Length: 318
Image (cartoon, rainbow, N blue to C red; front, side, top):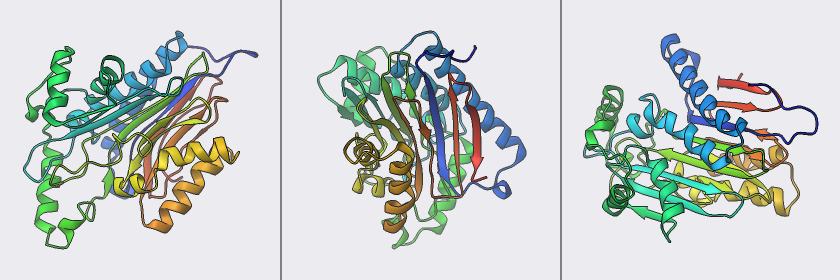
């Protein structure tokens, strides 16, 4: 697939696969290669749709589906375990052109939560469905349903047991105290028609209890898209991203305060969140094809592919 010629509208996408304590010292060469391969496959899936004239929504959905199917991210097949050794899945999707959105929280049997978010947006009068009702709607929509143990992986189970072994009364109040990496996945895209879209998917936090839900399915917190400003997908300590309405805040700063995309995202991620004690990062894109991917942790799985030839996959700060 070639690059855009002069006069053509830019298009492309950016993706993330989580942020946190991601360093060369704690990531083997074999696992790093597998993660880079997954990120590349996701970028290819989304870019192919955009190149062929498809919508940003379809591109975001395609990229996230690839990452949900990989066991290496905290979404779909690789989702973390709850305190009761089950999996509860969250996802959201937003159309920057119409401001339509769909979200799912605490689903347990739909194989690809991002596909359910799309069905909620397109086929229902609601924005968010949760729990058993979300799974029931997924079945009515003909989406693939699986047993909850489809999401099992040995790595995540060991992570749960390690977290439980360390837990005491105080740490249970903060399920992220011992989390070393946030594996939430997401994508943002700009299509040939100038439309933006964003989506996010996650398994939540290891050892979570009481039906905890983070920012990923919350429109304005973990996901936001508006053609008047930008499209954002977030990953990190969800409670802080909800309190600061991170995704919407970045878009609002570009639309209302006239800040550049990079300046707005940097301010929210590297100043507001840091001052509040929140960890994580975002990916963001605007209608001019500007892309920024700031994070305040040691690393963030991320990548982009644009029609003007920009292409990258990165993990570490450097």
